Length: 464
Ligand SMILES: Nc1ncnc2c1ncn2[C@@H]1O[C@H](COP(=O)(O)OP(=O)(O)OP(=O)(O)O)[C@@H](O)[C@H]1O
Ligand SMILES: [Mg+2]
Image (tube, rainbow, N blue to C red; front, side, top):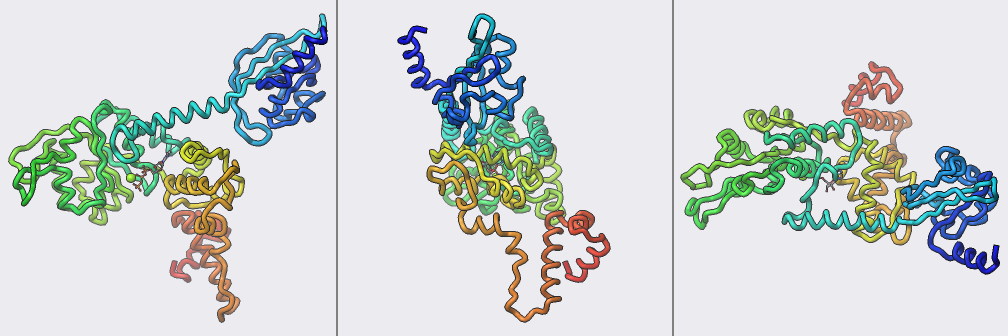
C-alpha cells in the first residue's frame, strides 16, 4: 500500500472517537484502537493478537458479531448493543460489522462501534424531566402524571396487583386499595386515574388523617354561605373532582360520623354543601386507601361495615416489599437512575454487601424507605460510581449492616449466669424466627431446626 495512504489510515484509526476492531480469518485481532479499548474497558495490549473468545470468555461463536460475520461474510449494520464493560460501566453502542477481504481467498471482519451512552443518558434525562414537568403542570406538589409505566416490579404478586388495577381503570367502580405505608398506593391510584376514561378530568387526593373531621367535612362537601359564621359559598372536593377521580387517602382515619355522611353521598350520587339546601349530582370515581387490613379495621370498629362494603367494590392490595424481595434490584436500579439525574451524579450500582443487606432487611417503610436510602447514600457520593456501606448514615448503617450481631449482643458485665445468657440468646432467636415468618409456628420451627412441639413449649416458657 502506498505509504502516505497507510499513514493517513493509521492516524485516523488512532485518533478517531469511534471504536475499531478487526480480526483475521482465524478470529485473531489485527487492529484494535484506543477508542474501542476505552469503550470496552480493556487495553490495546490485552487484545492485540488474541482471539475473540480468549478476550471475551462470555461470548460464543454465535453471540460474537465479529465471529458471526467472519463465518457468514454478510455485514450487520447499525446494531444497538447495551452491555457492562470490563469496568462494570453500562455502555450503549451502535455497531456495524463488515466482512473484509484480506487476500483473494481470505476474509477477516471489521467492527466499528459508536458510543451513544451519553446520548442515551441525555434522552433518558429529557424524558424524565418532561415527566417531572408534567407533574408540575398539573398543580399538585409531587405525584402527578404517574402511570402504570412508572410502577416498577416484576414479582408475581405485584404483577397480579397491577393487572387488577389495570382492569379497575376500565371502569368507574369504587376501589379500596390496601397496602402498608410506602408500598405505592398513591402511585397506583394515580395510574388507575391516568389510564381511565377520566384522565382528562381532575385527580384530587385528600388525606383523611391530615385534618379533623369538622374541617374535612367542609372540604369534601363544600359550604354554603351563612352555614356558619364567615362561611362562603364554596364547592367541596366532590364537586371539584366532577368527572374525575377523588382519592380518599387513609380512609381508616376518618371519624365514624363522617363515614356515615360519606356513605350517603356514595349511595345517592349527590352531595349537599354544609348549610346548603339543594343536592348537587356528582360523577366522581372514588379510590379509598387504607394502610391497615380493611377487614381488621371493620372488626376493630374503625371502619364502618356498611361503608366498607360500599367501597370494596374492587379491592386491590399491594404486597409489602419484604414479600417481593426479587424486586429490590430493579427498584434500586430505577432509583439510582432517578437520582443520577436529580443530583447530577454518575452512580452505576450498589456493592455486593449493600445488595446482601438490602435482601435481608425487612423494609418496614417499604419502597419509600428504599428510595430514601438510595437518595441519601447518593448525596454522600462524590465521584465514585458504586454505593457502599460507608455511604449510609450511622443510624442506617447500624440497622442494615450490624442488626443481626447487635440483636444478640449481650451485656456480659452484669451478674447473669451462663444459663440465663443462653436463655436470652434463645429467646432472641425465637423472636426473630417468629417475626420473619409472621408468627407461623410450623415455618419458624423449620427455620430454627427444632420440632414444632419444642417451639410451642419454648414460646410458652418465654411468654412470647
Ligand atoms: N412500584 C414502585 N415503583 C417505583 N416507585 C415506587 C413504587 N412504589 C412506591 N414507589 C415510590 O415510593 C414512594 C411512596 O409511594 P406512595 O406515596 O404511593 O406510597 P403510599 O402507599 O401512598 O404510602 P403512605 O401509606 O405512607 O401514604 C413514591 O414516592 C414512589 O417514588
Ligand atoms: Mg399515600
